[in-house]
Image (tube, rainbow, N blue to C red; front, side, top):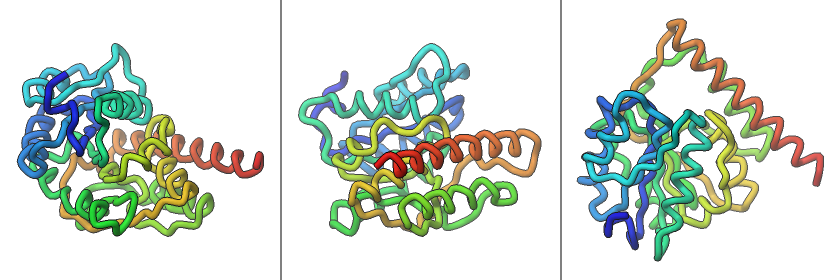
Length: 236
């Protein structure tokens, strides 16, 4: 483990799967915008050299031999980031396909540092790609039903939080349900969640067969999270 990863007050954990063409630019932008931060990459068994590109860019990489899904892989990377001494006091989560726009994420960490909220979520200021909004609409509804919070960006992976929030929301929900579960668990834990518009870019999915399949998988994972949180309510 690098000396940078040990003892940094800010840990950045980047979710990636087959992002070899963008992960280097994403990490370079993060390093420039957040000097001194410990950079971690949760590589979900990429086959295109993502892990090697991330290591070449100076990140600590947490990767396993087969895909486990975003939630499980980010859980493993978060636990690794928390295992250093001393642990970070602030954590930023983001996706590996942001490229140079990852350098625009500091307002999230600054909002938490100022005490405006415990969990700051980036809402993309411009819509890029997407389908007909069914999965997104369900995610908003599920969060509102489970904890009462109205959200604009319920599935944004760009999130800054105090380390206490991270610990309280681990392990993350499986697959693409990670962000929905995290939001519900944070609000139920008494933490303040706030969204901030940020001008970000990412690899968008469009109205294509692959795009619709991706959103169907998202919707399935969102439904699992909703049902699991509703069951918890009934068991209280």
